[in-house]
Length: 508
Image (cartoon, rainbow, N blue to C red; front, side, top):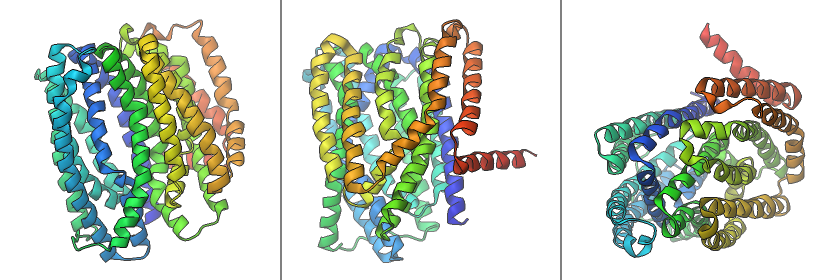
């Protein structure tokens, strides 16, 4: 299949995966909450956050793989690609060993750290969870190399087919473990089994279909130094992500309880859903952006890509965010239960600021391709440290809401203000034109939000699932029609009408 078709079908399959990843938890999460209970659900989230710190041992090499593979591929240097594959497999094998050691050490020190917020039984169980999750992560590192090769070769159809398989199979495996009575430990083991299945699916494709065999010859010292230098600031970005999201749960575990973690975890669950919605398009553009930068594409072309993708992302994010404001409380009452009502406010104070980077994440690909991500990483690190300190001070008084509020304010300062100035002055992106486009597109979201909140005062959408879904469907249809006729430009209308025509042709 040609590259344009790979890209188009890959994007469609990404959205199918995104839809599955959003719909499955609607039915899956309430079952987990019922079978696990609030405390063990919070314990599972805490173990995931603690183990997440071990991902830092990859030193930011994840994004680096795609960059260098794309560079060698652009030069038609197959030998260079294969040597890069071999290098990263060797590095990640060492990282996997470090992860196993680090996981064991972390599990041995949970008691002195979390004795205030966790019971004795919870401390015993979290040790087991951390050790299993560490093994899971150790397996995932070699898999990521082969996955990056597939992305760098723009074979999006196969990659997304595997992602769809994983999206469906993982919750099925988890539910089987839960119904067999193995609780959080069974879920964690099921996740490990999925990783074992994924490795040959990626590795065999790279060898058989792409014809690439990793070579373990000695790499030039200059290239290794360059890779490590590039990865340093990606690594700092990974630290920032951990400080923003994982540390919040760790502090809640230290100062509050597993129940508080559970409420917070439900609130920030929507962050990953919104992030997936945003990156469904921009995620497949990293190899293309890298090649554009390497070929010295003018800044006007990079700005055009940034704005075009940002508009599409905003159309989706504004629908989802405004809809969540209107229907979110009713949805959480029906979905998770009354014990999670505070999750609505936690979600809002993180989702609203998060909208800014979600509609600008093409800028991250551009900055990384230009090797100008040093400033971004250092800025985020400084703000993340302030976020951790302020969270630690606020959690004893405001609990999970305080943690979310600190993260939200930090995102506004770092990604909303500082990075926009950087994109404009250093990267060369026409950020003023970008925001002009976003403000012009905001008429429909604002109007729908006002009308939706007014209607919600007279209709109890939480009365039944039927009423709730009817409200969401009507809201989505009105929003979509309004956006199409009021704010969409010719390109966006063509994208929508083209997709609809294909669907109708296949339905006949």
